[in-house]
Length: 209
Image (cartoon, rainbow, N blue to C red; front, side, top):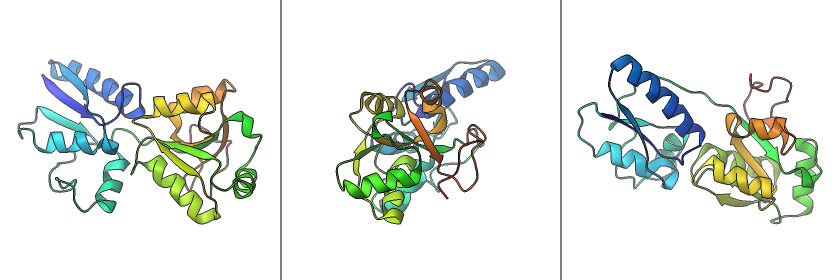
């Protein structure tokens, strides 16, 4: 069998992408494709596992922006994300969106900034791990707005979204597909998309820019 390794938890955007991709690959290739979840260090553990695996084409890796970010901030990685891997195809391009717990009573990014400035260090934001795109989105948000939020990292979007729903954290930069159902059910409030252009999944929502 071919092993397709993912660095995030079952149910995460990366995991779901891998399972859809693996299922179709299996049909086309006529052999089993097994998705393996190797958790930790914002997908670095998974990357290291694949980098050290036999280079025979039977162990594949589904990386993400977290792997590129970690390569930029961590000079002591035991692998080289550029040299140790051969890219095959782009399979997913998920928008990152800003969502909050409804109890915050904010309806725009401006109102969130004002609230965060009035309560420095009191609001927390969830991410899918240190070095992940949601983590860097939160850090960049604080840098650009002069606010101070507490970072709470998780091993994947399902756990982060669960705590956001429960009100244990108040803010989250999330892959859109991970929380869009909760937004449409009215359980989370969507304030903006984090890209330069509006996200096709939420075309009526303004951008952070």
